[in-house]
Image (tube, rainbow over all chains, first blue to last red; front, top):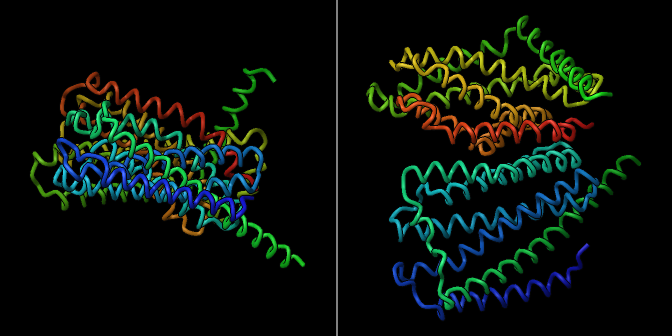
Length: 228
Length: 232
């Protein structure tokens, strides 16, 4: 069980890194040569999706661990990480949409990465809903683990399908906003923000995990009380 | 047990499970009738959504066809554990000797069978109602339909077993199934599109391969995951 205090330290560190990253990204870094100021949203957008992928990977591993060992902690990690992942995916979709509006002129376009992110979002929102509809906590944990594993294995197939679907219609050059080569003045804020968001993820995960474990124990106590 | 007798056993038990469901269906005719009537209604409604413009319909045809397939399939999947749930005999189902896999495969084969039967009716009906020349492409369409149906049903059967125990089962099944089967839907629609546009299956070979890959992955994973779903 994570102690609230050590989680607090992570939280403070996260705050520091995000503040530094935002300063670097919004003020210090030069505006993009082609896209101008709006490109700065990438400093939040790109680290968010990377963090979300990490979160889903953690959920995947924790789900396998749960089915294998039946450790309640593993399930707590799985659901906590998925929740944080959904939040970061939401941020990715929102920032991507804002960026798209000023760059492509539309809030939403069925671009390959956007679509894949939206699919991910729906899979994990479904995962969270499924858990809330299960009759008992063990069933929620088992069903959740199964869906988390299926969903994760589905990602490469979805990726391939969506990639083919879009590249048949439009060239993929505009789908890569940053491109493979990126100036150092832009790379630094990106990396600082990534570290910041990873720390935010760690903090949220630890806090959510503590809540989940308290919830698990409360349920246990209540069940024991009912049995007399 | 030798590998050969294991496979023979698995097939025997799978067939026993499938045959039970088929027999129930033959007697009650609850599922297939509902599926077919629903499919006819869907085809009917599409017409109102798109209007009588033949060119527009032709362009939308592969998508419409697969929407009809998967909506109808969803209806069938939702009922695939209905009998067991209504009569509270899930536990009895679990008493079936042998591995749980045979239970999964039995239900899966049944679901595929019902969905394919419905598709066999929808496809010609679709061709007639929307004035599409599907006949020259029938073998290709059949291949795509089988691959798509298998992919849709692998995850669908697993999720149907899972959601049968939930409070909001009618809602949760499509909410989980549609996002997970996006590759199947995309693959099947695009392969059908290539066929209906007269480009031939070779033009959609990569989609067919994707469908096959999806089928193989989930034919391996879903039976394993099924164990954890049915545990009591």
